[in-house]
Length: 138
Ligand SMILES: [Zn+2]
Image (cartoon, rainbow, N blue to C red; front, side, top):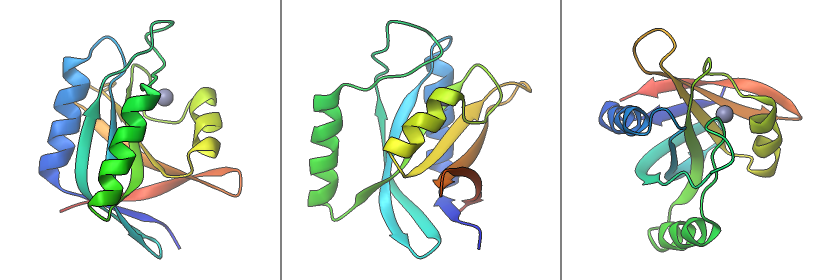
């Protein structure tokens, strides 16, 4: 059964605006909500700063900031369900992304502006394989 990611159109727009504002570097965000069976619902998004200085095609989030956001989510009874970032390349997980997906086994939402408009696709690492997650806008 395919996993589904439920995200509001409003939040997707915010993520894409964030991606646009961060060009030419990659933008990142954490998405919080809950998971039930194969259905993942995003209730809250937090745009984060990309601290990577090594390359414009990677992203790195301050660990203290990440920790703070996780604690705050726990207080709201939410969990980290998805990590968003934008790509200069097509919206598919890179080799680095695949390694990070194993370390952070949540849904990975990747945006790309390859065809002129921002487009996002979602993926999840399942048994060492990348599976596409159906993005459901609500
Ligand atoms: Zn990537």
